[in-house]
Length: 221
Image 1 (cartoon, rainbow, N blue to C red):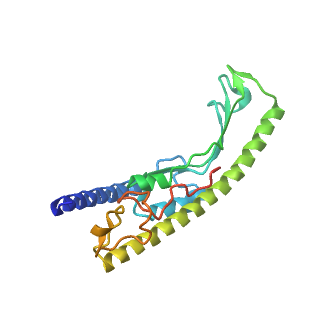
Image 2 (image 1 turned 60 degrees about the horizontal axis):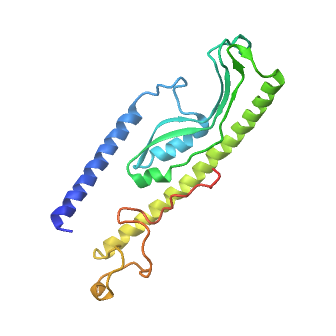
Image 3 (image 1 turned 120 degrees about the vertical axis):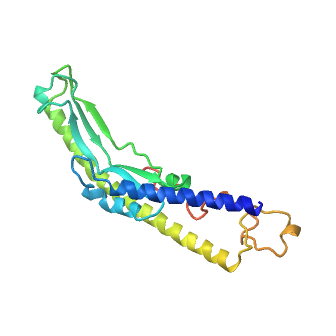
């Protein structure tokens, strides 16, 4: 790659990094417009962990909730279609790069949504509603455990990322001619530094971080 082209790419990346940093500062300085006005206690450590890293910032979060959707004070007064819902924790995060977003790409099917009435007519018994409440409370307890597992897995992944980045920088500083590109003709590689396991093709391209596996969370998360 010509030197002028390399400088252009580096400059572009610096501009995007500076723009992301500015955007992050603006978003985190805004007032919390949620009804509660603060981050839920069960996810505050997770939010702080992400916001402490330069490649992430959170835009909204919810530790989980149980609700009855109808807009009426009590179920017996409902005149529409009342729905009982449990929603697991939700975390919206802005990421600087695609590989950062891939690290956090986790979905869950831990929710619950059950219709209770139709056009004002109650379709279930009070005993069944009590049963749903017990199920929802159990799901909420499991939800808290999942938040803790998510936090621990993410913390470990970020620590590995930091270690890998530090090692890469040390290698580059000690030998600026070291290359991480794919294996070429051995005759052309004489006198150059190549990765230790040069008999394998790297799975990531030059912009990816080989020290981070996207699947850092349990399969059944």
